[in-house]
Length: 218
Image (cartoon, rainbow, N blue to C red):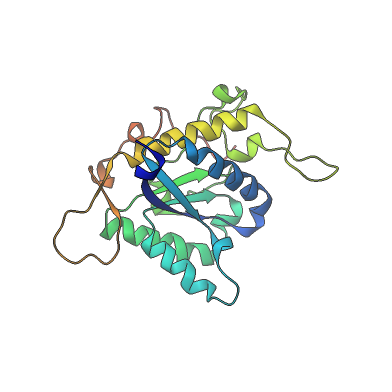
C-alpha cells in the first residue's frame, strides 16, 4: 500500500497545559513515528492547530465530535482539570457510548485516576518498565523516559523513548485495523470508524500486550 492509498485518520489529542513541555516532546516524536503506520495516515490535532481569531471552544468541540480516534495524555493536571473533564473527556465518553467510539488513554505521568470511575474502567497503554530499562517500575509513564538539559531545557536523547514511541505506533496501527467504515444506511451524525468488537467486550490483549495495570499510587 502506497502513501497515497493510506486511510486518513484524524487523531484528537487531549492534554493538560501544565504538562506542555512533556507534551511537546511527545507530539514531536508521535508525528515522526506516525510514518511507521502502513495502512493509515494519522492526522494529529491539538489546540495548537486553532487559528488566531477562531473560537477555540468551538474548534475543540468540532474535533472532539468529529475525530476518528482520540488519545488522552493523562497526568495529575489532566485529572484536576474540570474543563478537560466536562468539555473533552465527557464528550468523548458520550461518543464511546453512542457510537462505539474508542479513545486511547496513555499515562503521560504517574497519577491516581481512581476518582474518575469511567476512566478507571478503560485499559491504558502502559508498557512494562523492564522492557525500557526501568526494571524497578512495573509499568512506565512517558515522563519516566524524558529528561531535560538543565542548561537550555531541551530534551536529552533517550533510545528507550524511541522504543516506547515505536511500540505505541505499532499498537495504534493494530488497534486501527480493527475499525471499519460504518455501513449503516441511516444518517450518521459524524464520520467515524466502527469497532468490529463492542468496546465493552474488549480485553487488554486487544490493544496492548498482556499484563496487569500499573499501580499508579506508587
